[in-house]
Amino acid sequence: MKIRKSQLKPLQVRLINAMGIFSSKKNTKEKKTPAKGAVVVEKKVVTQPASFNDVLLRPHITEKAGIKASEENVYTFEVTKGASKPSIRKAIIDLYKVTPVKIATITITGKRVVMRGKAGVTKATKKALIYLKKGETIEFV
Image (cartoon, rainbow, N blue to C red; front, top):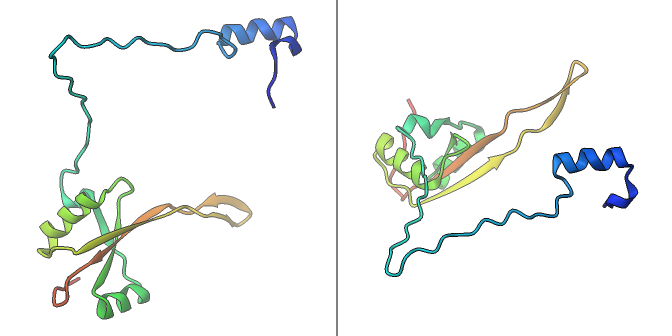
């Protein structure tokens, strides 16, 4: 529902003007144009994890994951929420000395639960499915 300034009381208008909600000025910042022939480079900050321990948390060992590993050569790992596929690939190569054919990631959201009358949320996680070539395996000791 939109509210017009005319529908508000004078005190409310003064408070809202002080907060800048109904300001008529838009954030217009003029971009400086570079000189002719100048090269413009945009900086992107990309943080790479320091080691594989910052990406791979633990192998996700369940009955379903065990069947997939033995029949389809697919291994499941829990990874950090910010882990990207290239960083997961690098961590698998460094740690297990195998090259993944394909990597699929699954983000699992936290679920609402009630325990002993109190509401809470389960932990949100991220899983990575690592597909390997036939004949390559990952040994969990």
